[in-house]
Picture 1 (cartoon, rainbow, N blue to C red):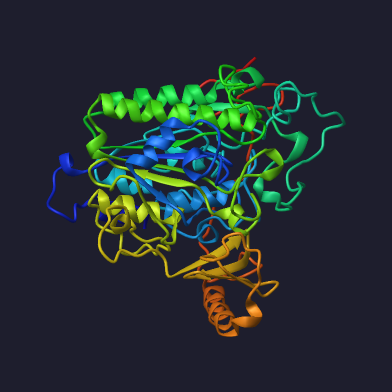
Picture 2 (cartoon, one colour):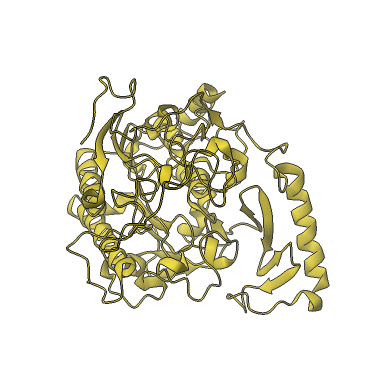
Length: 490
């Protein structure tokens, strides 16, 4: 089926040449809070993002998922996360499951239309070779395949720089981790192996604390190099940073820049990185033919210094602060400067949106939950986002929104997000009709994707491998059969 979908996506639906096909850069920050950058209320200096928003559009009601892997699954496939990656939380090292290699990704859709494709940064949709970006439509990959806290205690993955290393015996194993008891999702806790840096098909580095400080800069340098090498286009660059996920490792040049703490220091470095990308596009005179999206994979974790003001809650929840993310779209001459939209949009919209802008024919056999939001971005009259959005956390459907109304299902709490963005006043008693409408919408969705179970009619099969192994073992040996020659990294 996948070959058929790729064949369909390769046709050009409109009579246009590649010169009219935009380059696309998707910048995805890890754990960035809604108000962690200037355009959304931060007090720290983020001049590049401020300018990006001044020249582009802010998406004020844009949704991700509560945690990393599901959010990225939506971004890559155009679907609700539960449809394509039904897991209770996130993936860990040596997971037996991952995004199915037969899933059609945004990279594959664009590649079928003649795009060069690259992923530079954190992947987090499976670390076995079958699940990595080069098996999912990307020509090139450079990055850490999951979160930067999924390494060893001794090498700095469990603590911020300058803080004492956690003490105690190794804890955690496959299938035994806080918040995730699924034995297929990998190795958890202090039993996790060393962090690997992957370059295309090779593990090239064992990532320790000193290297963690360098990755925002190294990813940025790779991104700039990629843009220069592919400036004749069209290209799709997916740039998912490990910043600003705990442990907090800004480059040493940025430590102390905010005067607040490491999390805000790192946000300032993220702003620098965005500036490097935008400046390169301007230098090469590509800005008029390049769409750049800046966003986050979920709401910020309050315990690590993130700011989600004025939203309630944080990472891991389906309160607005856990799932609504700061998002900016920039395309000079195409997206009106200094604009914003309150329409409901989501990460699952990127695949159909990018496909439409690249003039790809929609693969008709593929059910998408996302929609083409390019009319919103381009300021077309009567352009609309989603009428309904469903808030899944793992297997569970926890809330549903239509228009301004959001119903938290378990507690029957109703909020009007237009007048109460902070979800402070439950108005269910006064609006029983809205409660009934939203409950009915939730019941319809449960027939498709279910609730509190991963076995549901609309849930697709994940990728699965037998006997998954870490890419680097505890003694530093790179997994045999991945690199051409097994080797030991210092």
